[in-house]
Every structure is written in C-alpha cells, then in structure tokens.
Image (cartoon, rainbow, N blue to C red; front, side, top):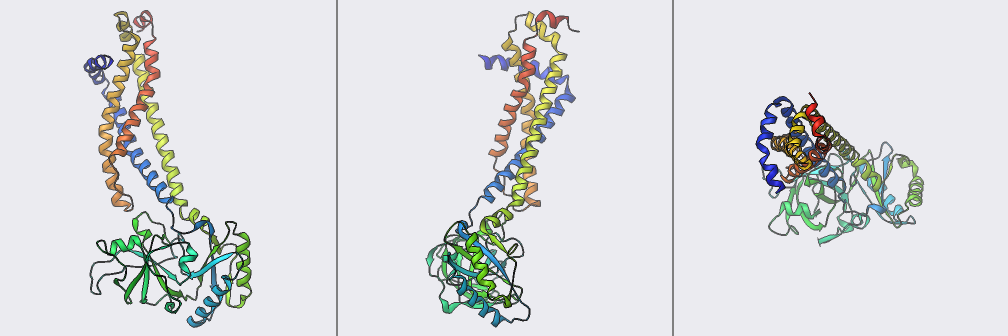
Length: 417
C-alpha cells in the first residue's frame, strides 16, 4: 500500500523537479561523478588489497637475505669459488637450515631481476610469456621452503655459472606451475624443451609457486624460472638464508660474523644490506598501501560531499515548500505521506545520477585499463553495489529534512510566505 502511494506521487514529484532544473541537474551530476569515481577508486583499492596479500610461495617467516659485494679485481672463476666457500660456511652457521645465492629474491624490487621469454620453437616469432629468473642450486628449493609438484631437483654436477653479459643456456630448468600452464596449456610441461636466447633447455621440474623479484599487478609475477647456476657478477650477489626459528636476529648476526671472517674478498653493509622477507614485503607493497589509503580517503570525502549536497538541497526545498506542505497537511496528509514524498523525490534524483554514473564508471574503467594496463576489467556488480550505497546514502541524507518537513504544523506552514 505504501509503495502504491509513493508511486502515485511520482507525477507531481517530476513536475516539481521540473521547476528546479538547475539544482536537480547539479545533484544528478554530483551523484553520477561520485559513483563513477568511487566505483573505480574502490575497485582499485580492492585489487591492491588482493595484490599485496598474495603469498610469495616461500617460507617468509624464516627467510632473510644478505647482499655481498665483491672487492675489485676478482674474475668469474674467483667469484664462483668464493660463492661456493661462502655457502658452505653459511650452511654451517648455527640456526641456519639452508642457503643459496642468486641475483635477486622474491619482492626485491626493480633492478634486482633477470627476465626471459621462453619460446617453444627456435624460430618462433611471437614473444613467449614473461618470466623472471633465479640463479639456483640443489639447496634452493629447501632454502625457500617451496615444493616440487612434478619432476626433480637439480643435481650438484649441473650447477654452472653465468654473468651479467652471458646468454643463458642451461641443460635443465625448473619452472613454476603457472608458467608451465602458459607454455603448455593442454599437456604436461615436464620433460619438454623450450628455447632461451642462448639455446634450448629442458624442463626437469615444476614448482607449486614462487613469486618473482618484482611485484606487478599482472599474473606473470608468479612465472619464475630456476636456472642451475651461480651468478658471478663483480658487483655482488645476494645470499638467501632460511633460519630454523622466527627470531632471526641472532642467526643474522652469526651469518654476518661468518662472512666477515673472510673480509678481504667482500664488502658487507649490515645496516642496509640485510633484509628479512617481512621487510621486503613491506617495501614492495608500500606504494600499493599508500594508493589504497589515498583512494579510500578520496572515496569517503566524495560520499560525504554528495550526502552534504543532498541534505543542503533537501533542506532548501523544504524551506521553499513550507506553504505547500502545510496545505497538504491541512487537507489530511499524514506525517508518513510527507516523508514518502521527499524520500521518493530523492530516490528519483539519485536514480537519475546512478544511471548516468554507471555509464561514466564503465567508460572510466576502460580508460584506466588503457592508461594503466595492469588494472583489470571492472565487474558490473561493482558500480551496482556503489549504486545501492548511494541510494541508501541519499535516503539517509534526506531523512532529516523530510522529518523536519513532516513535523511542521499546518497553521505555521500556511502562514509562511
């Protein structure tokens, strides 16, 4: 019955709004822009939250890394010998479960990764999927706390070396399951041959998961490749260590002391050259967290501004129509009738803004996808949820002015000029 009464008031409401075209249009436009901006902003916030909460696939609570710089004048053979000696020393440190060396580590950031695009044929013109490389040995899987879902680990005799300017061509590689599915979507990747810039290589193992050195908002940051080699870069190398206990401070101190015992071949920075995986995660996602907070604040302010505009306009219209309200009250209109009138009026105004806002939200998302390519397509339910929120906000915003209007005594309202 209440719905029928509200529906019967739509025609006079539309006529009344027609006499306030500019004010109505401004609120409709404000609602539309709020929906378009907040839908995309909150969608970005949601994608960022999902992004920064993804696991690296490693035993993050027990991992830390040490950057080891080499003294000037060492060649590749000397660096390889030093790495092997250092790793043997680090694995003997009390509290260290295992260790290996590599160019980078999960979530290390830009400048700490090597990438490759493996191809299925040597003459393939199309680019293969983007993947990030880790220099690895037979201790890498145990150190990272990851697991094989198929195939085998590297053997000690397979570990070679490569430098910054070398084309990688290992006899065998271990890849993540996500990369395997992209390379061979319809069959098992185990035992298959792929082609690197340096030549063919065979997939000998498949990992459950392992995040790359850089955190990107695409699915490819989980496409990683383990290459059986020591990275012999004169600038330095990262030692990745897995501790037995979550309290890694004493283990870090012992590991640094063990490396410093052979200080003539290296340069260590105990303050900035030691990073736990918790610190790496915090640094890698600092931008995402800041962006999510900024977008949330902007969305909240826009919603408050829209609610304020609705309250202001409703209050203005109540003051303009006090005489009309008084006449309706004197003719028998109840408090509920007055409330329904203003709520129905607000529903129409916000509804008009929502229709326009949904179109603007979709267009804005398509534009953001072109400018910021990692942003995925926004599902339609996102602006629809935003529309529901704005409808509820509009009804709450108009409730105060409508309640005030419904309480105006008929005699007072009729006497108001």
